[in-house]
Image 1 (cartoon, each protein chain N blue to C red):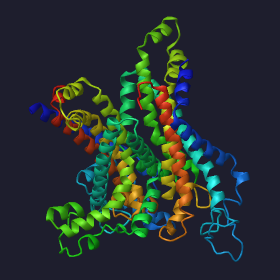
Image 2: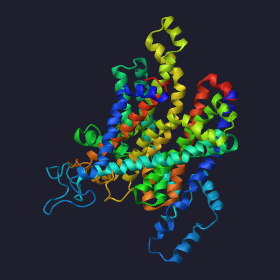
Image 3: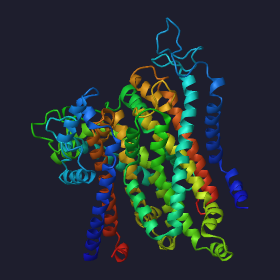
Image 4: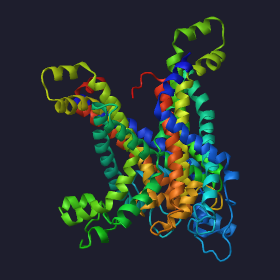
Length: 345
Length: 283
């Protein structure tokens, strides 16, 4: 166990410089983005006003000083003052208010993709070149080729407008938990907190509103998870230990699920972790389609309104999430698989 | 010899033919956009007294959008924009990624370490967000903004692939033989090693065109691409989005289907190429 703990510590230590470099890369975008003083003061501001504003907000300080300030502010999750709104609020407030909605959407999409992908991929490997295999492969491939924002339109048109099976997604407290008291759901994790409160009505409403965007977003990692599962399972099913398990009379379902799938999980989990990046990127588009009050839409709007600091902080939050998720994935399978502990030192 | 065997495998693959047909159709759309379209794609074509959006009829094959632009003509011309974006973005990624990847794989050491850490950092960004930031930085405006944003995002993918292939080839006997005959390192790399790494690059490039078209459509849909008058599929979807809940779906359906069919075509083609060029892939 101590070896595993050492490994966890080592990986976490490697993540720190990586995050620093990522923050530098994000911050390097700043000079490229539109000048926030334009967004604040308008196109017609006088030169003196712009210069005074830039000096007051420290925009003319040396690059390293500003980057250092960004790192310090990022470490406290405040990300400094929102100089475009200029009302004393911080960029971090906006980001923290929207991150939970994105987190729950991405988590739900990933769960759907993993469950569907594991089942479809495993079926494809057990019955290769049969109808189920072909259907699963074509489905995954088509899903990966359809623009996620267009799929969002079409799905809400069909399921929310025509068939009326699902509500038109509205991720607001007023809709999900109308009778919440003041101070309830302060975490803004609407689904997770309603689960924790065991408020079944709110859980049901949250799931219904989450279903469409999560299904649409899940098409992005689904193809990769399905194919990876199929390929690794095909490999594992050809190995000697599977023959042994069959020879000693283990039922086929047990051979597939308990022997082959368990061994195939590691590459699948790795690929799934790496898909978080694509998933979070897709969240920008999905959130914009469904007017989801998440971080992706916030960043997209900040791009349009020229609020550079929000763009930089938002991109950094996404990239940091990706780094942390993959760190957790690495750590998780070292803890889960005793064989990896020896090599992990 | 290798190419002939790959072609024999490719010929028997139905997915190759489906993908090839789809890509060919889009190429035809782009090539024949002029003669096939019934109206100008970039201005109002409705007559006086017609209230846009006009439903599909004999004058407007796919109807018009709310500005009175003909959807069918815009769809055809949009194929040009999409192919241009996809091919140029991959071209950019190849132009930057292949030499850098080759140097990293061939030289190893510090250059390799630095370049690979750089790709690590680039890959830590969600590609759509990185593209959004680049597009925002480049200023809104044209198809070239999309090419730049989408192309840069793909550079690390090509770097890694080329590096891996070059590293694998570096220690082969025939490379030693090349060196032994007195060929310079550059010449060995350019004339012998890189051509040998062509297969995986070809596969990655084909798949890359599909994903570039998909990302570009997303950026354009977010309003970071060409202006609304220009015929571009993502932009057409943005215009059509206003009619999402109403009956004017002729504006919204064709561009989405066109993007999906094009991307699917390139994905199928890339998959078929991979299966044909790499005998280890079982399908």
